[in-house]
Length: 243
Image (tube, rainbow, N blue to C red; front, side, top):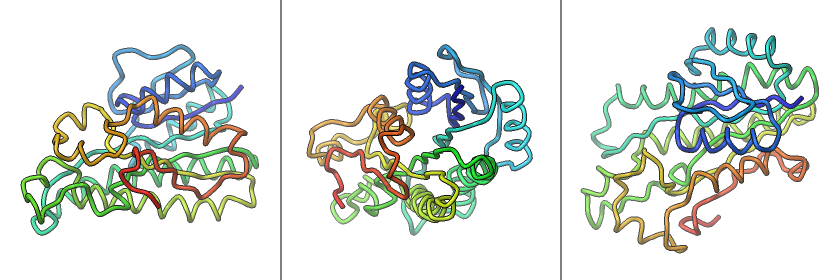
């Protein structure tokens, strides 16, 4: 039985990942602070603060007791932040880093250790194009765009997730555990309802992405089809950023 842990399971991308993995035969442990309105088949909800080592440790113990050994981890939990880099408050920086960085690192550490012991497993983290391109806003044209697009705290947090992924990929490789990330561009979710039309127009494919497209990339990275891929940051952004 393949058991997958998905953090941030109540959000648009997290719930899309849960649905797809469930359809593919995984037993899914869906982690979030509050229970989603609906859960796919083969899914159990666990309330968990993923930035708390104690909470994650206790939740992982419970998952493995009731569902079996975890073989897949998808870290989706995250919060958005916007605004000017020059005006970023320390409290906002700390809020974003706690959820987006610590909330990815802690599950990677605790579940990654179990995977390493068993010499089996795959981890996929959710990064962002904003962790690569310095943000989508164009303050030299219109400073107001910064109020409606992901800002410096979010971008820094996702750059940290990318770097974390690379380090973990090398550290866990000898144990047969793969670690990758997907870096979405603008995705139509509840978090991006206010994404400005003039910034949407910068996406070469002419539209925002969908949560199910991110889920499909996650599924591929978890699968045996990606068996020789580790340490990759896969862009899903409609050619908004190419590297």
